[in-house]
Image (tube, rainbow, N blue to C red; front, side, top):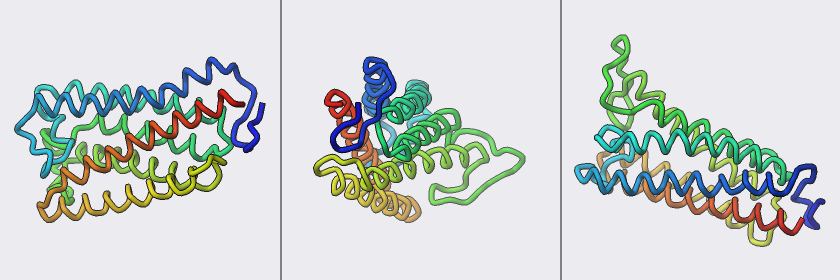
Length: 219
C-alpha cells in the first residue's frame, strides 16, 4: 500500500523489505566500529592529521578492509531494498553506488604497495600508485554518492523535516570534504575533517534507514 505522502511503494513482502532496510543500519555501524577498533589498535596513526586510509597499512588493517568490503556489499543490498519502498529511486541507486565505492576502498589500499609500471600520480595525499589511485577513486565514489542521495532525498521524501536535514547533510559533507582535501594538501588537520565527514555520513545513513523503516510500517 502506498503511504499518504506518496513515498512508499507496494509489491513485496514487508518482512523481506524490513530485513534489507536493516542492512542500512548494520553496514555503517559495522564500518564505523571497525574504524574505531583499528584506530585503538594503531595508535601511531594520528587521527587529527592522518587519513583513515593509513589504518589499512597496519597489522589490524585486515579488519578494516573486511568491514569496508562487507559494508559495501550490504549497502548494495540495502539500496535494492530501499528501491522497493521509496518513490525516489535515485536515492536507492545512490546508496547502491556508495556501496560499490566502499568495496573499492577495501579492495585497494592507498599506501604500502609498489608502483604499477612506474605510475606515480600526484595528489593532496602525496604521490599515489595506480592501486592507490583506485582506493581514492572508491572513496570519492562513496562520499559523492552519499551526497547525491541526500540531495535526491531533499527533493521528495515527503517526510516532515526531511528537506532541510537532507540539504544540510549534503552541504555539510561537501564543505567538509573540500576542507579535507585542502588541509591534506597543506599538511593541516585533514584527519579531523575526514572523520567529521564520516560521522555525518554515519548519522545520515542511520536517519535514512530508520525513516524508511518507519514509513514502511505505516504503509
